[in-house]
Image (cartoon, rainbow, N blue to C red; front, side, top):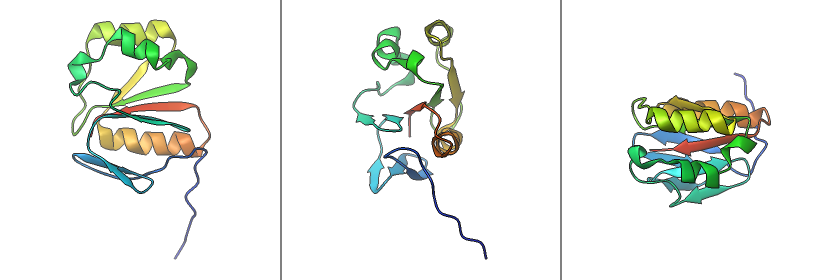
Amino acid sequence: MDFSQDKTSGRYTIRSYRSGSIIINDATYQDPIVLGLEHLQENKLPSDLDELDKRLLSELEIGSYEVVILGTGQRQQFPSWDILEVAQIMGTPLEVMATDAACRTYTILASDGRNVLALLYP
């Protein structure tokens, strides 16, 4: 039996994801969150993915990250082409995927010390 230690380069570790909730460290989140290696923000994202806008992406300074992941819930759901284009122009395209895949991808990139930001919709 092999054992391995969880490694992360930041303060926050995604422990598990189930439809409707994400456990990060020892807290459960059921509303959309913004997660970086050293910060977690609640009440920052709109409750509806269709309300994601340029102003918010600018506030989040997505261009300062290597990778920006957008977890859209149980299924992959793309935001408007305008938002995808804005992110591209800002210098860091949105990697859009279902939230379970987004959590796994974030965990891998964070453990590798990559400067990653995740916008997660449980």
